[in-house]
Image (tube, rainbow, N blue to C red; front, side):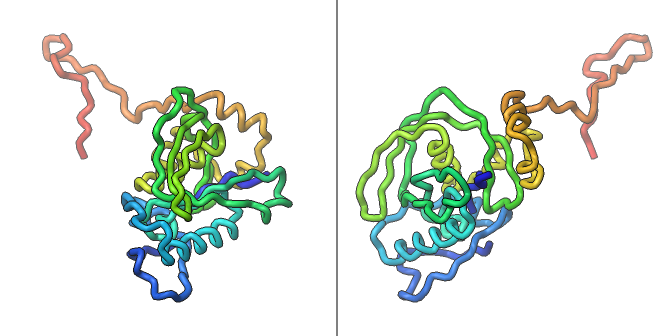
Length: 235
C-alpha cells in the first residue's frame, strides 16, 4: 500500500539571507514544535539562493520518507512554500520516480461545495492516519521556483494535498480537522481490508456520549426548582 503521508524535528529562524552559502542542514520537526503552529510569512524573492537551498532540503527529506508533500514549517522555517507530488505512482516499486511541484506563496481562490472524507497522515505526527473532510475541487494560484505565476484547478487527491500543505503554512495540523474517533495507528491501518476502511469513511464521525448526564433535583415542596438539576462543572 502506498503510504498516504503528507508532511512534516527542531526550530530555527529563517530569513532569505540567513545562509552563507554552506550546506543547509535541516531535519523534520514533530507535533509540539512551535514552528508548526506559527503563521508563515510570504516569500519575497522566490529566486533567492537560500530559498533554492531550502527547497532542495525539503525535497531530500520528503523523498527519503516517500511522502506526497512537505511544507517549509515542517523543517522549522516559517515561509509560505511547500512541495507536492506531480504524479502518483501505481505501486511502491515506483516511489523513486516521484516528482515534486514547488509551490510558493499559494492561495486558494475558489473551492467547491462538494466535499470528500478520506484518510490523511503527517510526517510531523508519525505512525497515525485519520479521516479529514476536504473540498473535493479547488482553484489555486501560486508561484513556482522560477517566479512564474501558476493558476490551476485541482481535484480529489491533489486538491487534498494542497489543502493539507496550505494548512501547515497557517499553523494548522490535520489533527485539528480530524473526525472524532477516526485516528488509527499505521499498523492497524495497513492491516485493515479496503472494504473496512471504506466503511469507516461512509459511516461518518461517531456520536460521543457525554461523561455527565443532568440529574433532576426537587425543591422541598417536591417541585423541580428553576435552574436545578444542571451539573456543576467545577473542580
